[in-house]
Amino acid sequence: MLDQAMKDQLKAYLENLKTDVHLVLSLDDSDTSNKLQALANDIASLNDKVKVIEDQSASARKPIMQVVNPTKKNSYRFCRFTNGSRIHVISIGSTSQWWAPNEVRS
View (cartoon, rainbow, N blue to C red):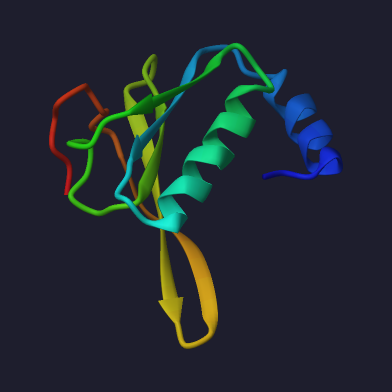
C-alpha cells in the first residue's frame, strides 16, 4: 500500500513512540475497507508498538480507522468521503473518551 520512501519516513517517525498505539478498524465489505486494512497492516509492520485491532462495534460509520493511545485514553477517528470526483480523508474528531472493545461509538 505504501511505497518504500513513505515506509522509511514513517518508520523513522514511529521510532519516537513511547507507548503503544492501536489502530482500531471498523470495516464493511467494500474495496475501501480492504485498502484501509492493508494500510493499517503496513503501518503496524513498521513498529512493534503499533497494533491493528478490528472491532465492528467501534463505530457506526464504516469504514473508519481510529488511532487510539490507550495510555492517555484518547483517540482520533478518520473516515473518507467523496465530493464529486475527489476523495477526501478527514479527521472526524478527537475525543478524550477512549476506545474499549465492544463499546459502540457513533
